[in-house]
Amino acid sequence: EQVVYTMRSAGTLRSFHAGCNDTGTVSQCEFDLKVNGGTVLSSVVTVDNTDSDREHIAGTISSAALVEGDVISMDFDDITGPGNQSGPFAVVGFDYATPLPGFE
Image (cartoon, rainbow, N blue to C red; front, side, top):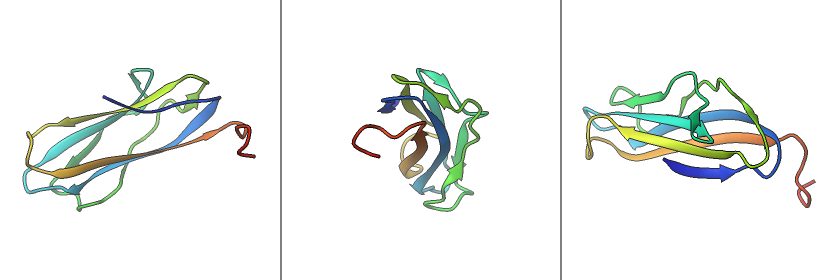
């Protein structure tokens, strides 16, 4: 599990996408978005060899509200073992309820 960001004030999760640079030929991997260690997706995002290379596969956010101090993290599991796909990536979209000082 990798920490992605710590919220500086209240906000909302807007999106989560994941994929692999090269999905390989027999690959399957899973991505999970977490807040304070608990999943916030309806189900993990699964990427396998039937998906296109560099395809952004959307996750469904089930719990979008964020408060100051929430820790956003991402978990990656390589189901088929190393070497089957390469370059896993994930993108998290969020916004703040009010602009942070200096970013108005």
